[in-house]
Image 1 (cartoon, rainbow, N blue to C red):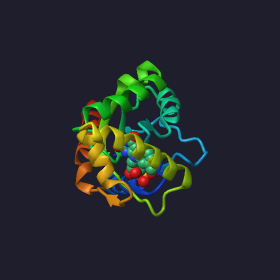
Image 2 (cartoon, helix red, strand yellow):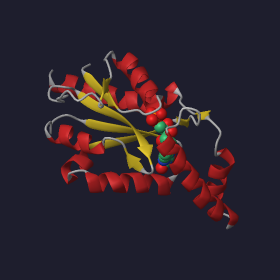
Image 3 (cartoon, protein in one colour):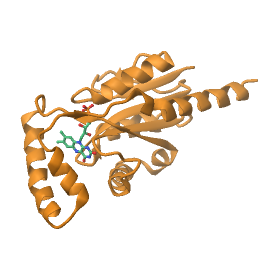
Length: 189
Ligand SMILES: Cc1cc2nc3c(=O)[nH]c(=O)nc-3n(C[C@H](O)[C@H](O)[C@H](O)COP(=O)(O)O)c2cc1C
């Protein structure tokens, strides 16, 4: 199997998933913060593991450039976020909508999506992120007062560090890598 795992991470949750995937697929994960070019050409598939910040997927433009330069390579994106985007339909559509706007249409169409849960570490949070969270808290408190349950959940967890990373959540991503590999194997028979 010749799968590529590429990631970006601020506080380590996404990196942990990338490392787990790398172990399972016998490949060294590539940090997209590393400025060296990372061509995808020749890989069986490329799996991008990327965190969500304010509904934006980090490094999505870089995904577009790399994927466009390697049109034959199957692409997956595993998002890492606080909310469970598998069940949070509005949250998922917001993130995917922004990706759609940021990516060339043929690249967006090729993407196989997976959604993983990360965590929040208030002690290690950068000042800028802390301020953003405080602003969001102010907004969410208003919404919670009007009965918004999602906003109430946000307020209840504000300021508390949590970690939802779970290796088992990667099973569908590994299944994707295996199925791509099986198809390649059959094509080469
Ligand atoms: C400033 C800030 C904004 C965030 N925005 C979102 C968001 O819009 N939706 C979400 O589900 N999670 C959001 N998160 C949670 C991150 O996606 C989560 O912490 C993730 O695990 C970060 O991955 P990392 O540790 O690899 O950087 C936000 C976190 C911070 C600090």
